[in-house]
Image 1 (cartoon, rainbow, N blue to C red):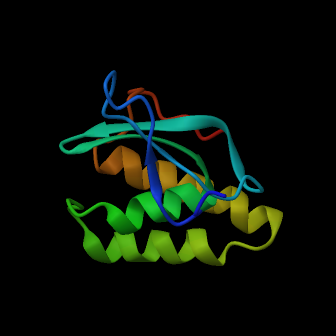
Image 2: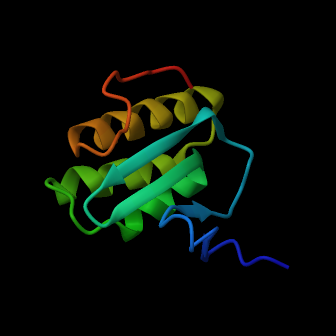
Length: 107
């Protein structure tokens, strides 16, 4: 049985990309690919986004990061989940972590 709080490294010989195991209830339409210094991840759900952000230590605005984490963790309604996804993508874009230079707000 998988521990949903652990990061799983997949294909470590081929890539440093981490795949985060967790809830699939709040999936993004397409995984959000994040690449930066000391970072190469694919985030597919609100749970994964929160875990990624909690472990990301290079944020230029730590207070904003904490606020986004709270929104991800506390999102309950469909509208709150949709907004949390948008805010997460905005944070990732601000941090320069999104692979695609175009910001897509589709969730």
